[in-house]
Image (tube, rainbow, N blue to C red):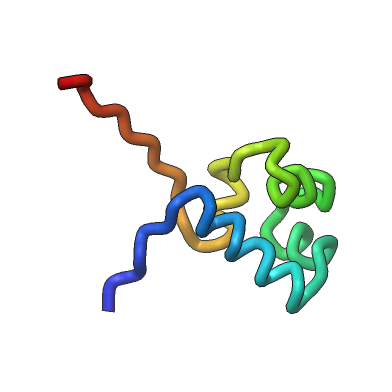
Length: 68
């Protein structure tokens, strides 16, 4: 089964879920990020970065579409 693409909000939900299970600091260490970065993402102060997405097994892709 093909993995599902996630929206920014779904990525934050995934991060929240992982933080509840393993703790924010442990999650940050396991994906090569800092606890502050994870906190900033969870609080909506920063977007999910490419490196955080990669650490969670995803890649960040941004699409721009023409205005019709």
